Length: 115
Image (tube, rainbow, N blue to C red; front, side):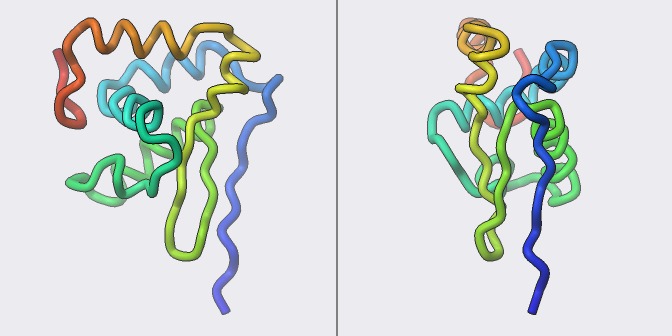
């Protein structure tokens, strides 16, 4: 029987602004966050269906380690959702502001598309 995958997530009080801003500074990760804000919890493969699995794992891990997303295993799936409530508790309005600015720049196209 295979071991159950577990993921470490920072506690709310451990979520640091510099790490969150770094995680949100990369266009592909920002696109992933936008997808999550629109769809809610999704399988990680939906965040980058055309990406190599190693690239997808790298970016989702960085988002998880920074406290932006929560990741859980369900069977063979890796489900990801935004930690909206936790981020709003630490930095009220930050996520909403970043996503609004991202949409204003017209970068809501395909994953990884830069303005």
